[in-house]
Length: 274
Image 1 (tube, rainbow, N blue to C red):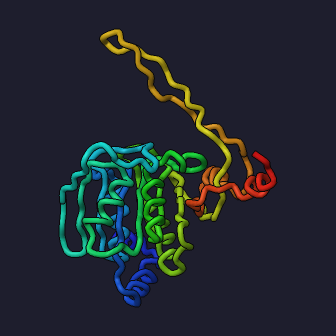
Image 2: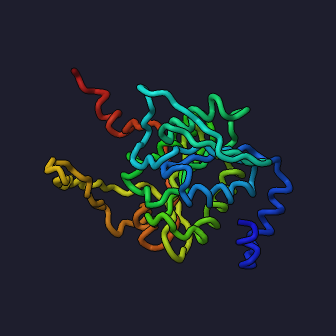
Image 3: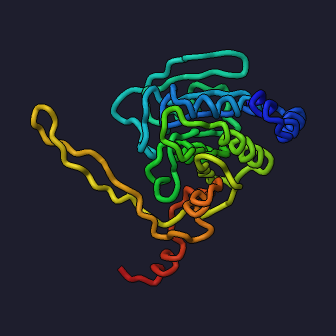
Protein backbone atom coordinates (compact mmCIF):
# COMPACT_ATOMS: atom_id res chain seq x y z
CA UNK A 1 0.00 0.00 0.00
CA UNK A 2 2.79 2.41 0.91
CA UNK A 3 4.51 1.64 -2.39
CA UNK A 4 1.15 2.03 -4.12
CA UNK A 5 0.74 5.50 -2.62
CA UNK A 6 4.29 6.60 -3.35
CA UNK A 7 4.15 5.45 -6.95
CA UNK A 8 1.22 7.74 -7.52
CA UNK A 9 2.93 10.65 -5.75
CA UNK A 10 0.09 11.04 -3.29
CA UNK A 11 0.99 13.57 -0.62
CA UNK A 12 -1.21 11.69 1.83
CA UNK A 13 1.45 8.98 2.11
CA UNK A 14 3.93 11.40 3.69
CA UNK A 15 1.25 12.64 6.07
CA UNK A 16 0.52 9.03 7.07
CA UNK A 17 4.20 8.33 7.71
CA UNK A 18 4.53 11.36 9.98
CA UNK A 19 1.36 10.38 11.79
CA UNK A 20 2.60 6.84 12.37
CA UNK A 21 5.91 8.03 13.81
CA UNK A 22 3.96 9.91 16.47
CA UNK A 23 1.75 7.04 17.62
CA UNK A 24 2.33 3.74 19.36
CA UNK A 25 1.39 0.90 17.05
CA UNK A 26 -2.05 -0.47 17.89
CA UNK A 27 -3.30 -4.04 17.61
CA UNK A 28 -5.77 -4.29 14.74
CA UNK A 29 -8.11 -7.29 14.43
CA UNK A 30 -9.34 -8.08 10.90
CA UNK A 31 -12.08 -10.42 9.73
CA UNK A 32 -14.58 -10.67 6.88
CA UNK A 33 -17.45 -12.75 5.52
CA UNK A 34 -15.93 -13.61 2.12
CA UNK A 35 -13.39 -16.02 3.57
CA UNK A 36 -9.69 -16.17 4.32
CA UNK A 37 -8.70 -16.25 0.63
CA UNK A 38 -10.77 -13.22 -0.41
CA UNK A 39 -8.88 -10.47 -2.21
CA UNK A 40 -10.61 -7.75 -0.18
CA UNK A 41 -9.28 -9.22 3.07
CA UNK A 42 -5.71 -9.25 1.77
CA UNK A 43 -6.02 -5.68 0.49
CA UNK A 44 -7.33 -4.26 3.78
CA UNK A 45 -4.66 -6.14 5.74
CA UNK A 46 -2.04 -4.44 3.58
CA UNK A 47 -3.45 -1.04 4.52
CA UNK A 48 -3.84 -1.82 8.21
CA UNK A 49 -0.24 -3.00 8.53
CA UNK A 50 0.79 0.61 7.92
CA UNK A 51 -1.03 1.57 11.10
CA UNK A 52 -0.29 -1.27 13.50
CA UNK A 53 0.20 -4.94 14.21
CA UNK A 54 -2.45 -7.11 12.59
CA UNK A 55 -4.25 -10.28 13.63
CA UNK A 56 -6.54 -11.83 11.01
CA UNK A 57 -9.19 -14.37 11.99
CA UNK A 58 -11.43 -15.04 9.00
CA UNK A 59 -13.86 -17.79 7.97
CA UNK A 60 -12.32 -20.68 6.06
CA UNK A 61 -15.10 -20.34 3.48
CA UNK A 62 -17.53 -17.64 2.32
CA UNK A 63 -20.10 -16.68 4.96
CA UNK A 64 -22.05 -13.91 3.23
CA UNK A 65 -25.50 -13.14 4.65
CA UNK A 66 -24.68 -14.58 8.07
CA UNK A 67 -25.39 -11.31 9.91
CA UNK A 68 -24.64 -11.94 13.62
CA UNK A 69 -25.05 -15.71 13.45
CA UNK A 70 -22.99 -17.81 15.87
CA UNK A 71 -22.24 -21.54 15.98
CA UNK A 72 -24.12 -23.20 18.82
CA UNK A 73 -24.27 -26.88 17.82
CA UNK A 74 -20.80 -27.56 16.44
CA UNK A 75 -17.26 -26.93 17.69
CA UNK A 76 -15.08 -24.16 16.32
CA UNK A 77 -11.64 -24.80 14.93
CA UNK A 78 -8.91 -22.30 14.11
CA UNK A 79 -5.80 -23.00 12.04
CA UNK A 80 -2.85 -20.65 11.72
CA UNK A 81 -2.15 -19.99 8.04
CA UNK A 82 0.56 -17.32 8.19
CA UNK A 83 2.83 -15.60 10.69
CA UNK A 84 5.55 -12.98 10.45
CA UNK A 85 6.61 -9.97 12.49
CA UNK A 86 3.59 -7.77 13.15
CA UNK A 87 1.17 -10.06 11.31
CA UNK A 88 -0.58 -13.35 12.04
CA UNK A 89 -3.54 -14.96 10.27
CA UNK A 90 -5.93 -17.77 11.18
CA UNK A 91 -8.74 -19.43 9.30
CA UNK A 92 -11.78 -20.34 11.38
CA UNK A 93 -14.49 -22.93 10.78
CA UNK A 94 -17.22 -20.57 12.01
CA UNK A 95 -19.10 -17.42 11.05
CA UNK A 96 -17.67 -13.86 11.05
CA UNK A 97 -19.01 -13.28 14.57
CA UNK A 98 -17.52 -16.61 15.66
CA UNK A 99 -14.19 -15.30 14.37
CA UNK A 100 -14.42 -12.22 16.56
CA UNK A 101 -15.50 -14.15 19.64
CA UNK A 102 -12.88 -16.87 19.21
CA UNK A 103 -10.19 -14.36 18.40
CA UNK A 104 -10.91 -12.15 21.39
CA UNK A 105 -11.17 -15.07 23.81
CA UNK A 106 -8.28 -17.26 22.71
CA UNK A 107 -6.20 -16.06 19.76
CA UNK A 108 -5.04 -12.56 20.76
CA UNK A 109 -2.87 -11.72 23.73
CA UNK A 110 -4.87 -8.60 24.62
CA UNK A 111 -8.04 -6.84 23.61
CA UNK A 112 -7.49 -5.35 20.14
CA UNK A 113 -7.54 -1.59 19.71
CA UNK A 114 -9.63 -1.76 16.53
CA UNK A 115 -11.75 -4.23 14.57
CA UNK A 116 -11.83 -4.02 10.76
CA UNK A 117 -14.28 -6.16 8.80
CA UNK A 118 -13.94 -6.46 5.03
CA UNK A 119 -13.21 -5.22 2.51
CA UNK A 120 -16.43 -6.93 1.42
CA UNK A 121 -16.96 -7.82 -2.23
CA UNK A 122 -20.30 -6.06 -2.79
CA UNK A 123 -22.29 -3.28 -1.16
CA UNK A 124 -23.71 -3.41 2.36
CA UNK A 125 -25.72 -0.21 2.16
CA UNK A 126 -29.26 0.47 3.38
CA UNK A 127 -31.11 -2.54 4.83
CA UNK A 128 -28.30 -4.90 3.81
CA UNK A 129 -26.66 -3.96 7.12
CA UNK A 130 -29.20 -6.30 8.76
CA UNK A 131 -28.09 -9.34 6.73
CA UNK A 132 -24.40 -8.61 6.31
CA UNK A 133 -21.82 -10.91 7.87
CA UNK A 134 -19.32 -8.10 7.36
CA UNK A 135 -21.35 -5.77 9.54
CA UNK A 136 -22.25 -8.56 11.97
CA UNK A 137 -18.54 -8.82 12.78
CA UNK A 138 -18.15 -5.04 13.11
CA UNK A 139 -21.16 -4.91 15.44
CA UNK A 140 -19.69 -7.72 17.53
CA UNK A 141 -16.45 -5.79 17.80
CA UNK A 142 -18.13 -2.67 19.15
CA UNK A 143 -20.15 -4.78 21.60
CA UNK A 144 -16.76 -5.61 23.13
CA UNK A 145 -16.02 -1.89 23.43
CA UNK A 146 -13.60 -1.84 20.49
CA UNK A 147 -13.91 0.83 17.76
CA UNK A 148 -15.04 -1.15 14.73
CA UNK A 149 -15.50 -0.45 11.02
CA UNK A 150 -17.07 -2.52 8.27
CA UNK A 151 -15.77 -1.73 4.78
CA UNK A 152 -17.48 -2.76 1.54
CA UNK A 153 -16.73 -2.11 -2.13
CA UNK A 154 -19.66 -1.96 -4.53
CA UNK A 155 -18.17 -4.62 -6.78
CA UNK A 156 -19.04 -8.30 -6.39
CA UNK A 157 -16.24 -9.57 -8.64
CA UNK A 158 -13.79 -11.92 -6.88
CA UNK A 159 -10.94 -10.04 -8.58
CA UNK A 160 -12.36 -6.54 -7.96
CA UNK A 161 -10.04 -3.53 -8.25
CA UNK A 162 -9.43 -2.19 -4.73
CA UNK A 163 -6.73 0.33 -5.70
CA UNK A 164 -8.94 3.40 -5.30
CA UNK A 165 -10.84 2.02 -2.31
CA UNK A 166 -7.68 1.48 -0.25
CA UNK A 167 -6.98 5.21 -0.04
CA UNK A 168 -10.40 5.81 1.48
CA UNK A 169 -10.02 2.89 3.86
CA UNK A 170 -6.84 4.53 5.16
CA UNK A 171 -8.48 7.94 5.49
CA UNK A 172 -11.52 6.65 7.37
CA UNK A 173 -9.38 4.54 9.65
CA UNK A 174 -7.04 7.44 10.43
CA UNK A 175 -10.04 9.59 11.40
CA UNK A 176 -11.34 6.88 13.73
CA UNK A 177 -7.81 6.42 15.09
CA UNK A 178 -7.64 10.10 15.98
CA UNK A 179 -11.23 10.68 17.14
CA UNK A 180 -12.39 7.18 18.22
CA UNK A 181 -16.11 6.24 18.27
CA UNK A 182 -18.82 6.34 20.96
CA UNK A 183 -19.43 3.13 22.91
CA UNK A 184 -21.53 0.54 21.07
CA UNK A 185 -21.37 2.42 17.76
CA UNK A 186 -19.57 1.13 14.68
CA UNK A 187 -19.24 2.44 11.13
CA UNK A 188 -20.69 1.00 7.95
CA UNK A 189 -18.51 2.29 5.10
CA UNK A 190 -19.44 1.61 1.48
CA UNK A 191 -17.15 2.58 -1.38
CA UNK A 192 -18.39 3.00 -4.95
CA UNK A 193 -16.78 1.18 -7.84
CA UNK A 194 -14.68 3.27 -10.20
CA UNK A 195 -13.79 6.93 -9.75
CA UNK A 196 -14.66 8.38 -6.34
CA UNK A 197 -15.93 11.94 -6.03
CA UNK A 198 -15.69 12.38 -2.26
CA UNK A 199 -17.02 11.10 1.05
CA UNK A 200 -20.21 11.76 3.00
CA UNK A 201 -21.48 10.90 6.48
CA UNK A 202 -24.99 9.59 5.83
CA UNK A 203 -27.97 7.87 7.31
CA UNK A 204 -29.19 4.48 6.17
CA UNK A 205 -31.59 4.72 3.24
CA UNK A 206 -35.04 3.22 3.69
CA UNK A 207 -35.50 0.18 1.50
CA UNK A 208 -35.79 -3.57 1.45
CA UNK A 209 -34.84 -6.65 -0.50
CA UNK A 210 -37.71 -8.11 -2.46
CA UNK A 211 -36.78 -11.73 -1.95
CA UNK A 212 -38.19 -13.60 -4.89
CA UNK A 213 -37.21 -17.24 -4.59
CA UNK A 214 -37.02 -18.96 -7.96
CA UNK A 215 -38.35 -22.49 -8.09
CA UNK A 216 -36.00 -24.81 -9.93
CA UNK A 217 -35.53 -28.52 -10.61
CA UNK A 218 -32.26 -30.40 -10.17
CA UNK A 219 -31.00 -33.20 -12.49
CA UNK A 220 -32.78 -35.73 -10.28
CA UNK A 221 -36.10 -33.92 -10.81
CA UNK A 222 -36.21 -32.70 -7.23
CA UNK A 223 -37.53 -29.20 -6.61
CA UNK A 224 -35.43 -26.56 -4.91
CA UNK A 225 -35.48 -22.77 -4.50
CA UNK A 226 -32.78 -20.19 -5.27
CA UNK A 227 -32.65 -16.68 -3.84
CA UNK A 228 -32.99 -14.18 -6.69
CA UNK A 229 -34.24 -10.99 -5.07
CA UNK A 230 -33.57 -7.35 -5.87
CA UNK A 231 -33.26 -4.20 -3.79
CA UNK A 232 -36.11 -1.68 -3.68
CA UNK A 233 -35.07 1.82 -2.58
CA UNK A 234 -37.90 3.67 -0.83
CA UNK A 235 -36.01 6.97 -0.98
CA UNK A 236 -34.63 7.39 -4.48
CA UNK A 237 -32.83 10.72 -4.98
CA UNK A 238 -33.08 11.64 -1.28
CA UNK A 239 -29.93 13.49 -0.26
CA UNK A 240 -28.21 12.50 2.96
CA UNK A 241 -28.76 8.75 2.52
CA UNK A 242 -26.08 6.18 1.82
CA UNK A 243 -27.73 5.14 -1.45
CA UNK A 244 -27.73 8.74 -2.71
CA UNK A 245 -24.05 9.12 -1.85
CA UNK A 246 -23.12 5.90 -3.65
CA UNK A 247 -25.25 6.83 -6.67
CA UNK A 248 -23.17 10.01 -6.88
CA UNK A 249 -19.85 8.14 -6.60
CA UNK A 250 -19.21 9.15 -3.00
CA UNK A 251 -18.04 6.98 -0.14
CA UNK A 252 -20.89 6.58 2.37
CA UNK A 253 -20.14 6.46 6.10
CA UNK A 254 -23.08 5.44 8.30
CA UNK A 255 -22.75 5.30 12.10
CA UNK A 256 -24.53 2.15 13.28
CA UNK A 257 -25.96 1.93 16.81
CA UNK A 258 -26.41 -1.51 18.34
CA UNK A 259 -29.35 -0.22 20.42
CA UNK A 260 -32.27 -1.01 18.11
CA UNK A 261 -34.91 0.70 20.25
CA UNK A 262 -37.21 2.97 18.27
CA UNK A 263 -37.21 6.02 20.55
CA UNK A 264 -40.18 7.70 18.89
CA UNK A 265 -42.40 4.62 19.17
CA UNK A 266 -41.18 4.02 22.71
CA UNK A 267 -42.45 7.45 23.75
CA UNK A 268 -45.79 6.83 22.02
CA UNK A 269 -46.27 3.44 23.69
CA UNK A 270 -45.56 4.61 27.23
CA UNK A 271 -49.25 5.45 27.69
CA UNK A 272 -50.54 2.15 26.29
CA UNK A 273 -52.54 -0.01 28.61
CA UNK A 274 -52.10 -3.72 28.02
